[in-house]
Structures are given as structure tokens and as C-alpha cells.
Length: 432
Ligand code: HAM
Image (tube, rainbow, N blue to C red; front, side, top):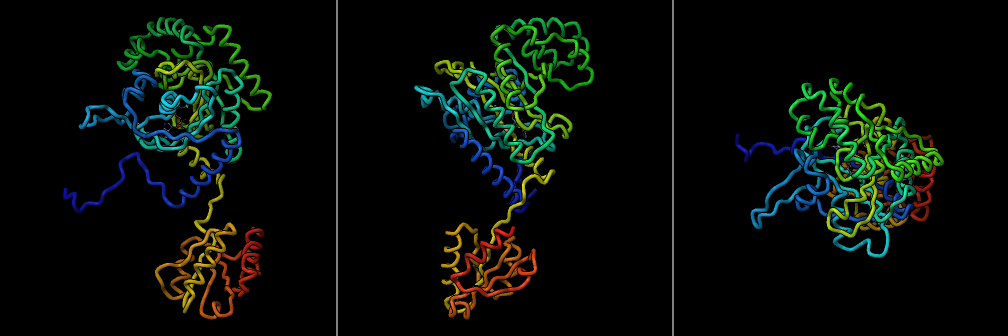
């Protein structure tokens, strides 16, 4: 194939976010920022590329992500192995340790950005996707777990998303999990003849992940498996109870799902997932999180508890689009067309004036007669054209035309003195 002439396409599973959904993404991100700031969460941004061993140590060597899904490469210049972040929590924990952010206080932080996993792409599962990551570091009690869950619940509410279920579980502490692990291995060993090679390997390296299997053959084995909840000590039980009591008092519904184990090794105690009930298959989780009290120490920091969650933005945007939950916003509200002597300068000044009053405004660029300019205006998605010709300049007026008028008054093109322009345009917006 002649690469010089062939069209270059995006990499499979890595999508362009085109202009129409771009507006929805911005809206979603705005809602998220306002919500998180209102709870005192502050923005922390970490690099996309990190040392590979950060993820191996954090997420765990025997996990799908580390074994199969990381985009890693060796830098020829120094022989170091780097990885495109397959999740953001590990990078945040690294940054918190590196900059000593927990020295004299706890921290509430968030970040929004791309994440990379080499999975088989399909609807809702991509190789580059985006997460809203929210983390509370340095807090050990169930109160902060409930705060985080409550923030996520409010996000669904603000986005108008319905039919989202909350699954909750406790993974206990590592000693409790080792006892459980031994019991689980003993149980599953009775069925080794039906296990495929992958599961046989997993059985001894990470048996809890077998509980996640969706294969029909495994369901009966999983159903009869011992429950981790029977191995939890008093402290773990009372932490879970503390979370549940707070969720009850906040009116947040949940179901305890004893089989919820999550795909990353750093968790202990509380884990949770929000599931879209209307979606089928494994791509129905729109948010997942939990406690990772051991991670900071595992990465070389002074021991500090932590908890957080991540929302999959593509999956949430899909639900918003399906349910028409977010209103599609216009690219801009006003398009200024201008022609004739001094009209360009007049247009620039009026553009600045209107932007200062909170409107979004495009001033025509590239010349053209009014017909051409109004065609551009209509294509731009603007609601209103402000038309400025020689006469408008000399009389200090503006002519207003509505695209898709919503009432009788708007059907007419009208000329208003400059002093009344802002008020007239505002009254149109207020009418909406
Ligand atoms: P996770 O469950 O691996 O958790 O990912 C969180 C969310 O990212 C999922 O619920 C899903 O919505 C979305 N997601 C995951 N994989 C894909 C994919 N291939 N395509 C599209 N969306 C996807 C974590 O990443 C943890 N770091 C969450 C966390 C934060 N735990 C504590 N703090």
C-alpha cells in the first residue's frame, strides 16, 4: 500500500470526539467541576506517561490490566519502560507521595482525563477512554466513603440519569482476604476439570477474580462458593455498617453484592460500582471505586488511608445522549455579519461588547456578501444574526435576525439602536 497517499485513520478504539458531542462533554465537565468544587475537591493533574512499575506495583501483576492491557514501551534513549496510564489513581498516589501532599493535612482531589487500555473495542469499551477521577486521601472513616458515594449519586441526579444501581461490598483487610482466598481455592479446586487454562492459572495467583466470571459454566460454582463476608473481622464489618448507615440516612439506595471484587488489587474494605440497569453486558459499569488504604505505603510513602472512584465519561455521555438528559448546547448564540465601510471594526467592537455581557459571539471572518455570511451564520448553529451594514454604522444601529424563530415577535427582522442591543438580545435569551 502506498502510505504516502492513503488516508490516515484514527487508531482502532481511540475515538475523535466530534463537534456535536464536544458540547455535551464540555457541559458534563462543567457540571462535574462545579459539583466537586462545591465539596472542596481540587484539581490535581498527573502525566499520562508513568514508569511501568508504578502500575505493576499498584494494580497488581496478576490482573487483566497489567497482564494484557497496558500500552508500554521502552525508551531507546535510557532503557526505561514507560506506560500510558491505564487508570489514574496510581499516578495520584505517586504524586501525593512525591510532593509530600499529606504532610500536615488530608486531601480531596480530582482529575479528568484520558486513560488507555488495550482491550477489544466495542460499544462502551475503548482503548482510549476518559475518566473523572475523585480521590480523598488521608481519611480512614466510613464518613468519607459515604461522601464520595453521595457525590457520585448527585452527579447522576444533575445529569438526569435514571435506572442506575449501586452495588456495594467490603473486601475486608488483607489477612481476612488470605483466609478467604484459601477457602475459595479449596472450593474451586473441586472443579478443576471444568476450568480453562486461564482460570487454572488464576486459581492460585488471583482466585478472587474468578468470582467476576460471566461464563455460564462458572455460575453454579460461583454460587456455591464461600462468601468473603463470612471471613470479615469486627472492624471491617463495622466500617461497612458505618457506610451503609450513612447511605440510608442520605436516602441512597444500594445492594450489597458479595461477589463484587473489582479488577485492581489495591482495594480493601469498601468497594462499589454504579451499574446502568438498562445496559447489557460487561460495559454497564459507569463508575467504580473503593478504599485503597495500603497503596501509599506500597508505593514508598508514609502509610495513609485513601478512597476514591472513577467515572467512565464515554459511558455516561452515551446514557445522556440516549435519554436526552443534557440539552445540546449551541456552538455560539450570535453571529455578526458585516459589510461596507467601517463595518468590520464596528462588528469587532460589538462582538467584544456582547461577549462582555456573557454572550458567545462569532464575528464573520473571510469576507463575503450578506447572503454568504448569513449562510455561514446559519451553519454555525447560532440562533441570532446581528447584521451590520453601512447604514447601521452611520446610524449606530444593529439589525437582528432570528434563525428558527420561536414566537411571532422573533419572525420579524428588526433594527435596534446600539444602546438597546444588549437588552433586546437578553430578553430573547430570558424568553428561552
Ligand atoms: P475501573 O473500574 O477500572 O476503576 O474504571 C472506572 C470506570 O472507567 C468504569 O466503571 C467504566 O465506566 C470506565 N471504563 C473502564 N474501562 C473502560 C473502557 N475500556 N472503555 C470505556 N470506559 C471504561 C478504576 O480505574 C479505578 N482507578 C477507580 C478508582 C479511583 N478507585 C479508587 N479511586
